[in-house]
Length: 429
Image 1 (cartoon, helix red, strand yellow):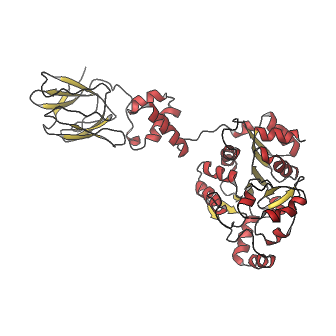
Image 2 (cartoon, helix red, strand yellow):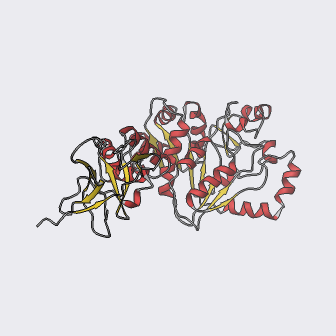
């Protein structure tokens, strides 16, 4: 049997109602004048010293003070709305000639919309994301439920991805199985290889490969790992897209010294710190310049106990993450001030095709030593080869020779690249 309806009369004085989901707008309803500026959708309505939350329907109208009889204002109920401690139901609001606005809860009827979870009221990104990805609701359905436009829902979903509310993963191991990846693994003895599809050049390869590398690293890392990191544009893109993990027993170690200044808005220290924060791991920086003015000064600095301790950490890395630079004058190794174009002529004359962690190598991946190496503080290519898992994130039309040389020298054990780069490399074999 249907339970009785309880009616409560609102005070006959003007009062404010917060209308939007984030409470950015308000609407004034005067019980005497019957006026409603419906600039939003959500409402907090006081009923007999209690409070309920409701959503104003899109076609709702309040009568003017001159209208006769009663007009009904339909409000959609929300979860656990109560009057005087009683249970909830669809809320009816009416205006009468004498008593002003009144509200009642129909105990027997069912809510006309999905109840709004109170825990999400202050987080529209989480609410929209859950409904879209978990409940598989359409954007239009979510817009109706939240009382916002579809464009706002699209914006919520985009922000949710950018702020890591949502983790969208195409299983990286599947990219390992395509023909290009299998051919690269077979040709160079790689343990892992991810080849992402081309987007037709819409976005920089470093950005796209960095995002793919973040998914790979997320699955590859375990608590207790010591991850060495060499800086680069692709490494930075990876760091920015790395999902959050809790790895308190892990360390992230800077494997090359500091550059002369920040380049393009980031430094080696920032790359390391960014990854460490995402992993909730220890950040270990190398407190020394990458390149000093003389070999004697470098040798003296390496005798410092602090530097020796940091190199001990570098040599304890069981995983290493690095990008690959070209020897062209527009590459990061020159733009950062690590080496001058004049100094590089020696290495290029010796057949250098690429740079990893500031170290030049030839088309076979062999380290080309020069006077610059005697002044550098950082991991050497001999040390790189001692790390069990070596992850290279690199791609782009100008990096084919550099990546091919690194692969021939066995420098990476895992490669994350894109389809055009993979094809270019295989065409050189």
